[in-house]
Length: 546
Image 1 (tube, rainbow, N blue to C red):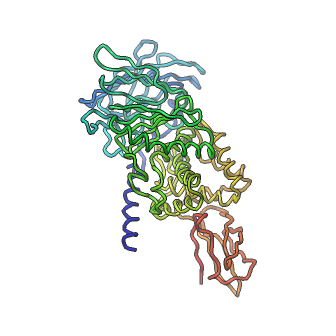
Image 2: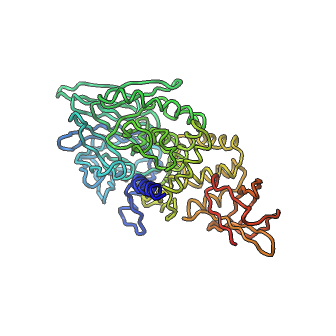
């Protein structure tokens, strides 16, 4: 027993590091926070249409320089806009119609003034030139930034992971989740003996006269700014197909053979997610796995993979149940983000549970597809013990660039399975889940929209359920007591008017009760020790007053 407890404890510690992403919870916010997380006219008066990014990487100096041609459409009359670029990066110049624009910098914000007012519904662009030594990642992907390292042959291997700190850590953009370009191009100049792999499709490889190589990629779907990626290394390419979807793989040259075998996991995963959620969202751009010098990240159509061709999470089962060793966590989790996170995105970091909760639940969905519901429940229940803290709310503070607690992953996943149990009709549940994805495909949404959709489609008032799990720390407690020879039950919860049906067993016989926050009499004779609530399918606590 001691060894088992120690294993779970150590697994939890390492997994907590995995989930924390080094962003500390804050109770006090400053100007820099509101500049990064807030929406003001300088941000809302225009809509990003396209990023056309040109970057040259200098590995020895850990230095980059480039230009972002930023195309946008004005939504209101404006002569001022805010873009974002970390303070340590240099603004070389900003051009509009070949003339330099005046700008001011405040923390990571760059306020740009136009010489005249831009009319409403004007589509135009600016060229933003930049350079510098970008923030280096200390522990990617959690403490993010650029990664300059070497492969085992001593060749340069370069990547980045900036979901937590933001894409403005290395290139100028509108660094807020409420807006993203409809398309993007990325052109990367590398040393001649190395390849660059970015998002979308490779459109051109050009050998330059200075002995370097220019790699051009194009994205034809909306993309979050943090998802635009550079991967430079001694890569080799191989490919496969799932139905009519191109599966493209880029790994270090000496890992091709093991990758060809290990990446066979992708096809059953695609089969499962296509059935349960809908077609792969970025078919025109292909699906790619790209070997990276860190564990993984959901870079759209270029998923970063660094799990060393092992099952589990870095060879471990974060659930402590044994089920997590049946599949490669990084392939399944990061690829599920293509549906939830890359296609459907949260409009504020405070609502990151939308991306991480549905994606974490997708792990259990995949297990159920492959090995059955019993194994999926074993995995979900294990995660409650090893990964969920119930110390801080899942939803963070809005407009200050703050996400909620790490429970956004597996508490949210268990909440979703609890809602599935409330609906109590798997055919209906899978239809609702698929319809949810279809309705919001390629859209940016918030918690209110999620709750409204599931409540309407299930025809059940799920508002108090979402509220309890997302906004409060404790999970609902189902209480039983005996009074004057009769048994009573109720919920102890924080959400106003909390109510939730739950299945119980009385001497082994199933019964559904519709509990509220008020004591109700059990309409069946029973002793307290005969009552057992379904804590496997419902993420709840049970308390019996004896």
